[in-house]
Image 1 (cartoon, rainbow, N blue to C red):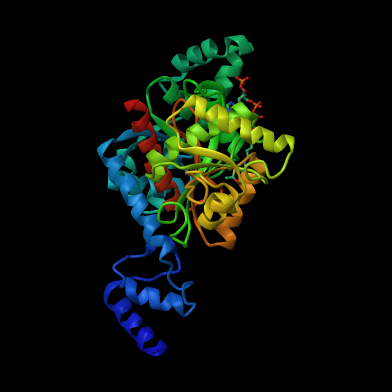
Image 2 (cartoon, helix red, strand yellow):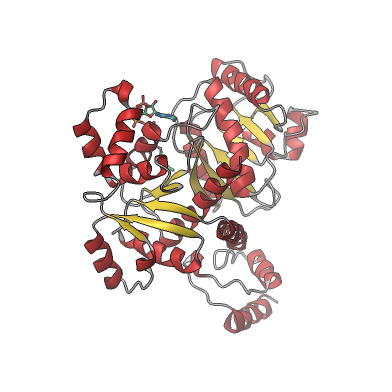
Length: 390
Ligand code: ACO
């Protein structure tokens, strides 16, 4: 029987799909029954049903971006993956792009990589551009209380990450994606200083949309985890804000209706500790901030995710066992948690999506691929459009 299915699978592959170990290159006209059979034989490392959902979700996000095109700055203009992603985005047409960098270097690299569409982007030289003096004035106004001098502002504005951020602050662009060649801090520090947080929010955090193989978790395997990327040690009020922002990310990016679990090592008073008190207080504040939120805690992860355990440990909770948004008590837990799920459970992690900022700035991993950049630009367009509609 095994060989029958394997034979059928190979025929079906030959007929209808292009298979490569690179997850992003799948053409998904695959017979899913055959894949189910294969995965039962322990062959699910050959093809992963998981990717179908990831691609479906990204396609939805791109389709929505196409209807809401926005201007996104890419401060790492000459960088190979950034340029290749830009070329693809310009063909797909879901964002207008500002490539920041030496124009000669950008065009030479575009030609070296055989890219035909880079001419459709606006290219801005950080050393020599029409915006400089206007932005320096704006920077000095914003950072007056910090004593920013003209010379300091001039130095900052010649830095592509500051320029990409200031374009947004000045209303010349809507969002930024960077981080392929710099740290999280370097990508987001300009935004923390100049864009600042959204109204009612004082803390920026980072969420991941996690797509797990076991579709009984979350909403058809889709969950949101936060904060996994930014704020090391939130207090109760900040943790509450992270929960409220994660609900927004769940709706606008993961496209799920949030059921938020506030995570701890305790479920409903099973342990007593000041760390637990913080999570209980954060849950109370989040409910106060948005009484319509479906949120509960404190929960251990199993009580949040597994219905039978949720019922036993937190009877009567409408979230226990059914959570699709997991809010971690601090960055150590969140960052470790998402990486464990990604590596041990083979989940897809889309993000980090920065949340709580007054405009969308998103940070790439230095190991990112071209399609990671394409996807994050699509996400950023969606965030920008969502903010405009508020
Ligand atoms: N939300 C809102 N504002 C913030 C935040 C925040 N989370 N953090 C800092 N700020 C503000 C500060 O108030 C300050 O504003 P001001 O200059 O107007 O007074 C400004 O940002 C700069 O603050 P610093 O503390 O000097 O910022 P610094 O650059 O040192 O740190 C940073 C900020 C980079 C976010 C830091 O908290 C950090 O390194 N976090 C961890 C990032 C990280 O390494 N994540 C894991 C890797 S990512 C991954 O694995 C997916």
